[in-house]
Length: 407
Image (cartoon, rainbow, N blue to C red; front, side, top):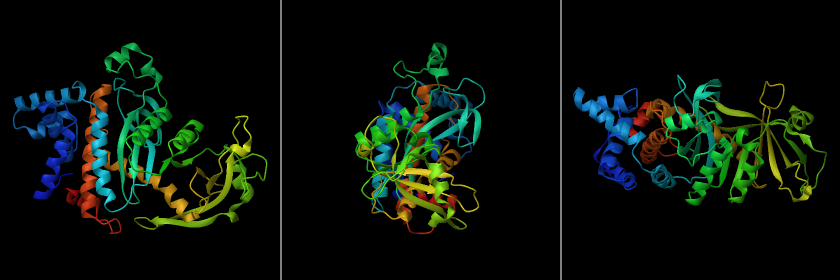
């Protein structure tokens, strides 16, 4: 990936570096940030300290010193990730909002495949990005989304207990003493609460069943004043309710409810144009209350939409989503919103393939987060530039061309 930048784009990039640099401690940190960011935005297959230094320098001695400086900037230099990420997020959001509003926050996670056992947080664990159990790190992310763009704005590294409860590993990876074991749900809620505290725009939180299955996750989102549309597992029990919220049946799991309705209750919905064909499936909506075992009167439980998906050719319904979105929305509107979550994987692919999201070769906890912060800020700048060049309704050109024009 390399950018052909005109004078106006160069001025914007300089101003952007000054914006980010205001959150760094001194001139040396700002210079190291700029060099690392330019390396991420520039040509080259690897976006880590050594190859970035090699591409930037003309001789071995200078390359060695630059490599050392960049490594120090990531792994040892003290600077806060949160204000850097927040400034980058606001920069991208401001550019996107000139064309269309940011409406959704999306929680997801992605794997960083590794060899060996020394990279912080690594162990054999399942990662959806590989679709299997692998030796990897897992990062939980928060994206903001319009109808056409997804921008990851925050990341947290999941640390298994094999790391948080091992003093030797903690010391080797420079894990701060205040960092304790937290589930992926804990990490997701931490990022959502940060975004809410910063008053970033957004109306609804989207997440898959790994997060949506959690009562704590759903209730915390509601307490923050946000709607949600989250996946749940097939054994989740619900009551179907009438227009007044009164129960119409005994509690039943969502898979059994879909089966009892049968495929004829499901109608085809097309939610957007794909690259080769229209994207569509069959859906059914029912008004429900979740059958919690909390001892409370069911009348106090919130009425939700249960969106069930039964793809053509499948023997049963395969996906179930609970959402607090209002009743006045059509099924097609609900489906479009729910399906926005799947485009996050494309953002991961772009960030890994073009921006080196998973190229960090260090082993420390601060270094991983610093690398991610620089990548997030670079991606935010490119998304903002891309928004200036392309109307949301205009057909996209090939990815390489759009990225090249973006800056």
